[in-house]
Every structure is written in C-alpha cells, then in structure tokens.
Image (cartoon, rainbow, N blue to C red; front, side, top):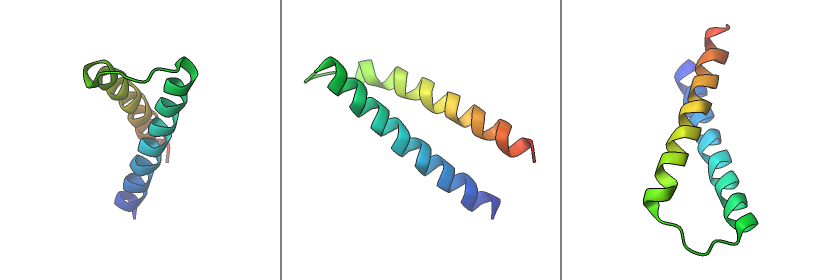
Length: 60
C-alpha cells in the first residue's frame, strides 16, 4: 500500500513538474532550450518534491 502511494505520488510530481516547465516555457516564449539547461532545474525540483513527500510520509 505504501509503495503504491509513493509510486502515485511520484507520478503526480512528474506531471506537476511537466506542467510547470511547460508554463515557464510559454511565459518566456522560448522555442528552444537545451537539455543541459533543463536537467539541473528538473533535478532540483524533483529533489524538493521528493524531500517534501518523505517529510509528509514520515509524519505518519
């Protein structure tokens, strides 16, 4: 059950991240951006989300 919750949470986090990135790209009207520019930001956001999830799950 916990593994399923974590998997779902990770999937939702990924979707949220994709949505935020799309919004940022549209806001700045950037047509091209390199993977080298995206990757560090994606990893930072994923780490932040993961840390929040772990803190939330540990609270129970």
